[in-house]
Image 1 (spheres, rainbow, N blue to C red):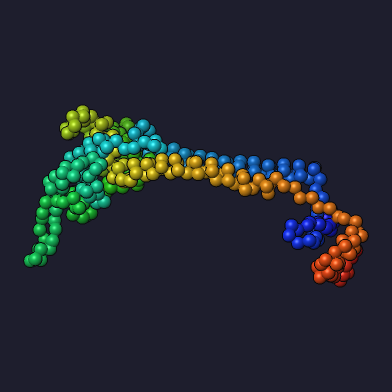
Image 2: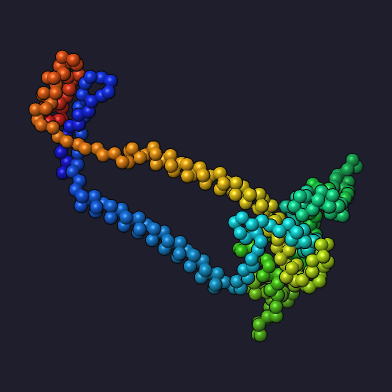
Length: 343
């Protein structure tokens, strides 16, 4: 139940008392216990609701994936999957060799320049040599004509076709996708690409597809225009690694992962630095917060209602020293028309 009360406090610098009028609410221990349990129940209920919502969303996504028209990709333990693991740069170099000798016949990489290879999988001289092996169309020259020249580090990797129509005409109407960002453009990109490249097989009995299509259970619908591209000993690696079908697929996946996320290693290095810096800062900030709020959270404020004649005695005792303050307090607290009780 709420009742008016007075709080008398003495200032440190001025020889007077300040009368503070406030309302105190009497709270029993049972009420405090009930409030505490209600708060705990709300927190538990909110947590269960959040967990249930996330679980429902996850179950829905799994159900949709299971009912799709393609097989689940194989989960490969990639070297770059961990939170603090990096790309295998030797695999990136081999993957570039696979792309150059196999994939570049049909697929472009329009966001990749030869200068991007420097310091990652090639030296500057190696990258210049790779660029110079290609003739790049440039111009116009002083006579207004286009011409070809050897490639430079600043050139993009040349596409196999001049435009999309030429690409479709050469591939029975199918447009080979650009591979620059393919690792990010497909769900579970790395595992999907690896499973797709190694998953070609004969179709099940009684299942027939359209002409010029090939059966692959990891592709949507099961039929894909691209034929099987990787075989054992198809190319020779410059570092002497045995070029099995699985090795070729794994290396080109590493290369495509790097081409889509060239900042991959730098991002994880920055994350390690951030953890090393902010972890001790969080501890210090938590300690500072406890120190600053300890006095506020641990204090106890007690309100009391003095006797009815204590105001009269208090004001009379300070009439000589502070008559103005006493007169103001008298007008405020003893006037029955100001909304407060008279004493």
